[in-house]
Length: 532
Image (cartoon, rainbow, N blue to C red; front, side, top):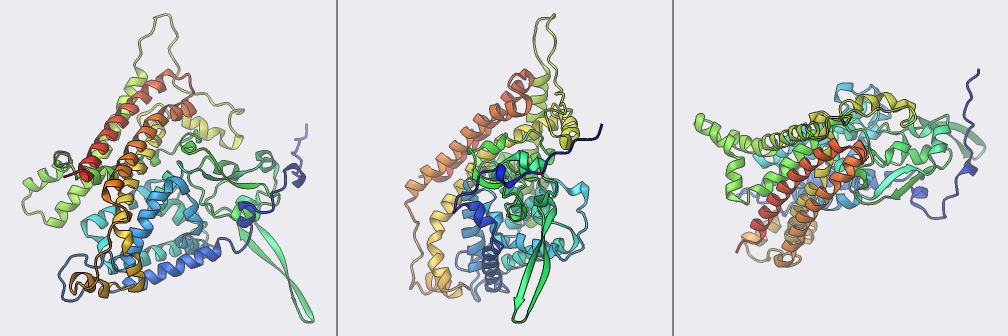
């Protein structure tokens, strides 16, 4: 019997978009290129303003230009802190206008278009680079000096461009950008999403232009002559099929699918907050490592405000320093931050995973009752044929130690986002008043001298009193912890099913761990902001 082909979809099968709609804007060729070009101009300005400027001549203060130079203040205070605070609401919309991603995308259109190594097509490179960047900032004070910040920004632009010249797609954004990894995690909390308006139209579409790209013909008319030429629009640079974009944290919201879709079937809408935590059934176990690193970074920064906890976290570094007295101060700082950012979080998560596996496999039931099956049989009707085999392989890994970590690590994202937002609230409240001074003197030398040496300018005050801000900080940490504990049940039900008793037992282990970690973070935040 001849195979029956699906009819080609028609534009009449979907309702027309209203006159003004976000999807209409996304379909325009100049969007978001104009915004990306403007952002690139700002980034280059910061690089020029900070290049070769380490401090103030004749002044021995370490990091004197941290809050007065446009490179350090603009990148580490305004951009990074604002990004951290807004990511739980905005998600991947930053990637829409990111100038680094634009450089990667433009270079990829003319590059060698080689495939990225399959072994690195996961979150491991992002986790390693995020840890490395954080260690550089803490150990060497990378974020305190304009010249170091300018060199970092230029290196990122060069790396993104080089990646585009060698590999196809936006591989820097998809697999290498450490900030992109954090943005991807937080995007699971945010309402904005990209998806298809009618998945059936996508299924029946033969060209899949949203994924593969398309060609458009243009006519150039001049006095006395007319010429037709063809331009090719690239497909999805993150290699995502639009019906899967809503459940994926890897969608870069670049709007290429909007421009290529021949049926006007893409939507840019909103979903329920936190829904991205449980939309995806299959999980990448390397993403758990990224969550561990981010959790460690936030936890250790809060733990330093509680003396006893800080000593406990730094104990491995102290023991190594006692055994090797000749170790230098830089190496000792690296050991301290390495223990706080990676060692203890890794041990904590591995302990949770092992306890969850033990709890899932331990039960008391009548002898004549049939034991619960841990594996989940995925039939072809439950998943698209293209992904059925991947789901079958994933089904066999969900009840392993790393499987439980891959599933329930998502529950830690609200807690981490709330704690990181707490730092952002304090930093922006205390230092955003420097913005007019930085804009008036981008180099920052004159501003520093006027405030600290000549005493003719007063240092800017906080935007709101600390007594108000600290309650917002405490609420952010406690609220993030509460949302994390609540989300465990939804995540487990989405992956394992509501009737999976073994998964529920594993979920209670992670709830206990989240409660303990949330309590520690809340106490550290209280100690930090309510002293005296």
